[in-house]
Image (tube, rainbow, N blue to C red; front, top):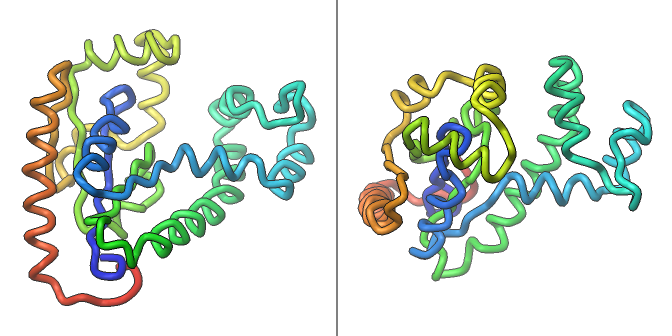
Length: 213
């Protein structure tokens, strides 16, 4: 809980539609905090840019002097030690930005809950700070189609990326709820409405305390 409002974490495989499900929670009065958006903001920080340039030079910057996230991704996925170094730089800044965002909304009566749309929720242990974790499930063929259309990945690339993460069956097993996200948006919307209803009902039974869990 953060100032009396539950924190809902979103997890799932690449291409499962986690951000779409988070958006549906947003339609129902939740404040959605997207980690990718926070990372984009962090990459514009002059201190972060200077540190990354010191590590990897101009090759990971675009002609406008901004960090090229695709170039950074290629670098860190090839070298796990570089990935860890980057995460050690970015994660504390992103964590502080997430908390600031929640504090700004804490007194807003229209905000019913916080939703953390974070690709690596379990891998970064952010699930431990959530009251509820929702696993977004989607068939492999659907996920493959989505990543091919949006990222240009084939099945091998999807598999390579997911092999670096916690196994999906493990994430699904330890999540509190599962939402099936196929092409039927209304079906997903109904599931989200039901999950939020249960989460809010459970939150009302908990003692209210300031700050996060």
